[in-house]
Amino acid sequence: NRRLYREVFLAAEGIEEYLSGVIMYDETTRERSNSGVNYVELLESKGIIPGIKVDKSTTDLPDFPDEFYTQGLDGLEDRLLKYRKSGLRFAKWRSVIIIGDGLPTEEAVERNAADMALYASMCQQAGIVPIVEPEVLRDGEHDLARAEEVTQVVLQKVFEKLADYKVDLDGLLLKTSMVVPGSDSMQRAPEEIAAATVRVLRDTVPDDTAGVVFLSGGQTPEQATENLNEISEHKPLPWPVTFSYARAIQQEALQVWRGKDENMPAAREAFINRLKLEQKALVGDLN
Image (cartoon, rainbow, N blue to C red):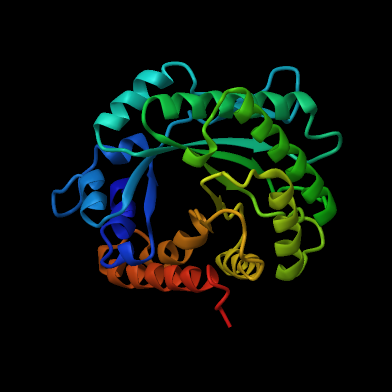
C-alpha cells in the first residue's frame, strides 16, 4: 500500500513541470513503479533530482523533558556514499524545536544545530547536497511574536554551527518553517506571517546560501499556498526561494485516492492542480 501511495505521485504525468526534486525514504529507492521502473530512475528520466531522507527520526533528549534530538549520525558516512552511487544527489536531515513554557532550552537548540552541521559536512564530503531542516513546531499557544523570536534564535545557531564545521553554504539548502503562531493561538493574516518570516530570514540566513525552501509544518494546503504567495511579494530576496511541502501538496490527492485504483486518475489531477497553485504562489500570482 505504501508503494501504491508513492505511485500516485511519482508516476503522475507532467510532475516535472512543477517539481525539481523529490525527497525519498530508503524504502522508496528500492521500489519499482507499476511500469517496472525503479523510482530513482523514473524521477531521473523526468529530469527530477532524487534525494534521500537520511536521519533516523527524533528521540527524547535525556534530562530535557519534552525536547528531542535527531538520530542517524552513526554510520552516516557509509550510507551517504552508498546513496551517491545509487543516483541520489541530495539529502535531508530534520530536527524539531518545541515552543513552550521555558522551551526551547539553549542546550536543545545547540545540540540539534551541531548535529545538523556535522551531517551537512559529511554530505558535502560524499558529494551530496545537504538540506538542513530545523523545524520549529507549530503546536502550542504561542503567538506570532514568540514564533518569530524562537525561529530567529534557532536559525542563528544553525548557521553559526555550519560555519564552525566549515560547511560550504553555496552547496547547501535551508528547509525552514514559516513564522506562524501556535495552532492553539489566534491566527494571523498571510501578510503578517510573510513579513515576520522574511524579517527572520534576512536577519539570519547568509546571502551566499544556495537556497531557502519552506516546509508546510501542519498548515492546510490553502494556508501553505497563501502564505507562500505573500512571501513572494517580498522578492527580490538574496537567495532563491521555493516550497518543499509534503502534506500540503499530498493531502487533497490522498483524500481522493483512498487506496483505490479506480480513484488514482482523479487523485493525480488533484495533485497537479495543487502544484499549479504552488507555482503561481512562487511568483505572487494567486489572485
